[in-house]
Image (cartoon, rainbow, N blue to C red; front, side, top):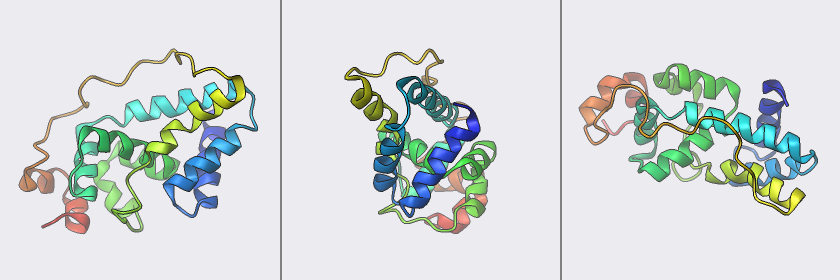
Length: 173
């Protein structure tokens, strides 16, 4: 599976789910069940690599602003959700997290930002196809600490300075 096929699976599931992350996860799992196990592992590698790449302080700050706070678990789920938004939003946000102010049409804290189930789609499909758990994917693990310059997530001034456009649109200030 190449990168284009990976993003096409993400995008078709998101469109069919009308943006609902839980429905998107279910649809993604269904689509992955149509593939052979090796293709599901390829999908998992693409997903995991992007998940790891999104482990940055600036994206955690973005999640914090959008969600009104984000624990490490909430940040993990946010990174899955971010991948689920598709290539344009994901790549734009990884390149410049403050660009989420323009990349997101809207953001509903009750519906958006939590894509934990999307992160499990490949594992669920692989297990259903093979009866075994997903093996090691052979890619580098996520960094132990987010990449980039740390930011005090509980300091509104620091968040507003780091991501001014996102703070202006979605922040508490």
